[in-house]
Length: 136
Image (cartoon, rainbow, N blue to C red; front, top):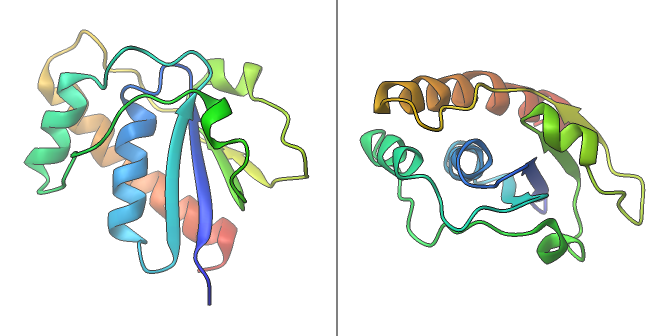
């Protein structure tokens, strides 16, 4: 069975979508290839997101915010929006792509504990939702 490609979409692609990409690739990596992008990408991934991933023993190497145009040519099986703003400005893909919307709190500007809480929330809710939606 080939891997399903999941695009996690957010506005800044600097926190929630980045953590979701790493978590999906780690937890479902044998069945899923996760990518992330943003409608208005920030200059860098949030330090809190990187630290929260490291604290969970996950590797944040190579993460960087990407514009959604960078992944438009990918063969995407599922789009997941993780913030309300991205849902409102979600791009139209050239083919019908199933999508789900799971909003998560934006921890920007908050203490590391907030990033850890969002990371754990993403891991529990998003991984399960992707597994269910893709039937894996």
